[in-house]
Length: 427
Ligand code: PNW
Image 1 (cartoon, protein in one colour):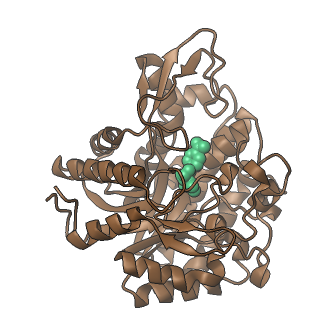
Image 2 (cartoon, rainbow, N blue to C red; image 1 turned 90 degrees about the vertical axis):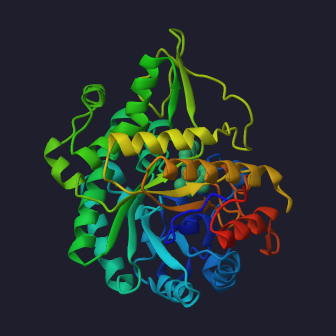
Image 3 (cartoon, rainbow, N blue to C red; image 1 turned 60 degrees about the vertical axis):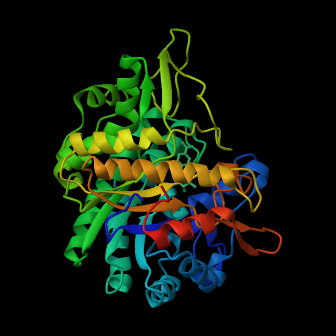
């Protein structure tokens, strides 16, 4: 039976706007996702996070479920719009610790206060300084109990889905804004690391969604730069890759003096992995708005088995990615902060079990190849608000009935419980 290191974190992950609901409780102010989801035509079926899973009121039941699963860690995000009263997270953290579950807190999972968006949001570098102040405030409240911190979740999505295609809030479509936002998000990360360290945080990380790019070598290299290296190199090497810098300079100017701040050492890199992309050279292709400047590149249809998101199931991509990261960015421990699948609704979910099984095996293979892996978090604990896709896509180990808000553990939850109890996979 493949075994994992003793102190390996077995967790699951969620994010504030996707599960909490209670959008008017305790002085919470509107976020860009309230605005976006309430704008007709932006989210599938007109769904919003107004109620979501009502986790804000049901968190004790949900912590009970985590305890039943045997999780030793739980990754959640703190809602910046709740800054006026963060006591919910105080209660959540106490409930987790009472069950022996380590809280892993993400400071920003996409719910920017609308008031900051009104001043330009991530295209305004002031937002990065505001983020550092916010990080200090959250640490002051939770830092005596939370030891593992993540600054940002997936800045690529915030920058390029939020400002490139506009499929996500704030719904902007402007390549210059997207590259500027990417830079300012990295600055926020760096300033956030400094703020957390100054406050005495033990372990600080950043979570990136990393997508291996397969296909014709030249387009694959360009797209890899725009999807992956654009964050990896500034954060972990203190420089933009030359090809990426040349490319983005066609749209905007970035302040290279920020790089020492951006590249503050981190203790672990969070990796969100779901699938790969395949690209081919095609002179007639218009490229992708989420990868500005990719005219002449076509995204190939995914191969083989697909999830409900239309994403190709390819566990070997995760192993290859982890090995690559350990070679290209040595000395940085890695943690899978999200991995999971949307599959058809029901309590029986063999396709999710197969997906998770394959990817946990990949993580184990990477460990055997010498990669320093610290944990694995399933996305997600609960079905939840899947952003522009609304509630239709279901990622939960636990099913949520959105009429009654009743929770029902799926077969995959029992499977994960057995994996955790055994400390690894059945051979
Ligand atoms: C991640 N895309 O997001 C997020 O961190 C989660 O909040 C989300 O629920 C999960 O993956 C599943 O989607 C992504 O459209 C969402 O390119 C969308 C994209 C990428 C990542």
